[in-house]
Length: 59
Image (cartoon, rainbow, N blue to C red; front, top):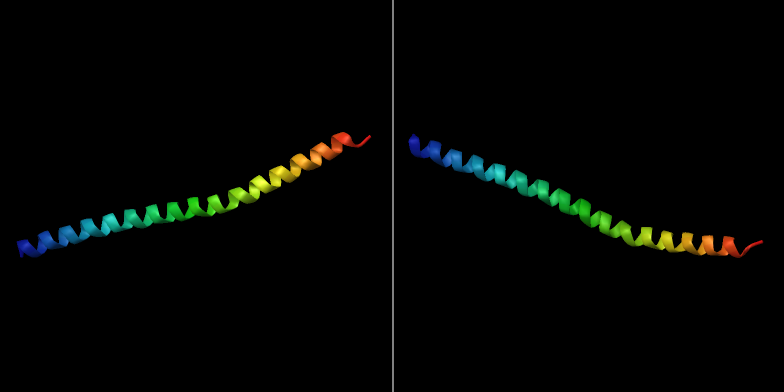
């Protein structure tokens, strides 16, 4: 019975570790999503800069 209890304890520890790994995986997914959005934001920034430059040239 004691051996079973120890095994169960180890399984519970592994389950907690797996839960933490899954949380880290979700965070990584969020970072990857943000990294995909970043080039779009940079492109919009360049467009805004171009529009501001044009607006300065207009009378």
